[in-house]
Image (tube, rainbow over all chains, first blue to last red; front, side, top):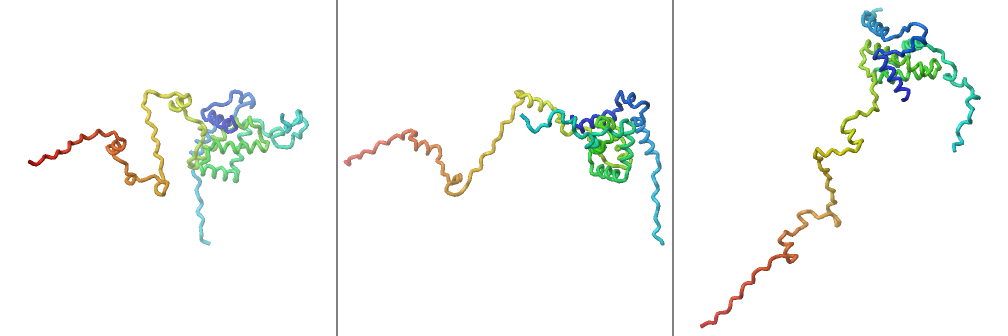
Length: 60
Length: 188
């Protein structure tokens, strides 16, 4: 298994909602960037209003 | 015998600060690593590169691998941690791509994987299927050179004798009954 295969496997596991078991023990506390956090981030992006494009007047 | 190999123990005397990844990593925790990568992706130059790669439909796995390799090469974190944070980074890129409306490809399927089928398995094991009638191999007729002294004669010019003629030439024809010569009738 090369690096890219390992990355692919890691991504698959994360997308399936699996996190490494001992990660919480090593990180000394709660983890911020969990799959749930990214779901919330995605929702917040969807709910955010689209930025209005300012019209530039050509008149001088 | 290999003479160009390094001397045993030479690694203990080598300069351990020659490359960034020889030094202790800057980041050692999961959240810090993800935060660093997200912050890096939001920088203008890196964001341009990211969106350009999504535009040309580069697989997200390849983009993540490239970003992580850069961070490892800079000595930001070690390979183990890089593999751990690959998932969150891919998810972040996926969210950005969805938000911007890119038609991206994740690349989670291994392109080198050979899909196993019964036919492929039989071929690998050398099993010959006797049930089905195999179609005979059609060997194309060789193209003969036409024309010239050494060329093959055309069919019309070949003048192949018919079967009767060939049999006659070989003397295999039944002998024809010899008619008796008419005897001269003496005139009275």
